[in-house]
Length: 162
Image (cartoon, rainbow, N blue to C red; front, top):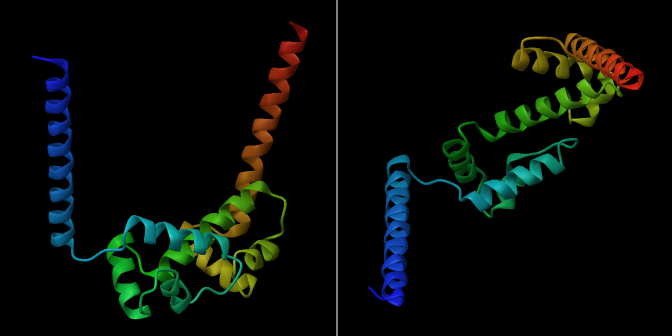
């Protein structure tokens, strides 16, 4: 077999694999129903992450992908597995966990920075989602950090003495 025939045959096989993947993907989408495209999901997620400290409404999210709020809500839930409100809340809590673990901000500051209007609402949502209070989470994260710092300092002292 000539090399050019091999590449043509390989190219045909690659095209066939691609077409089969697209057909399977389209069949799965038909079974699941209409969904947001990966680009639309990425655009909405980026918007949410960039605006966690502000009020994020359904209409604003729908505008990111040029859909009506109702249709966007249906597609988002179908694609992501959570309602837009629930997803935004999860993202706020994840960011709050990161900020609390860093230990540089008070709980009230964290609450405001991730878009909660007050610490009480934040604490309730945080506890409901994580199973612990923000204070306990922060304290636990601080104790883990201090153990790592002690281990690191001990390790550095041993290396220096060698």
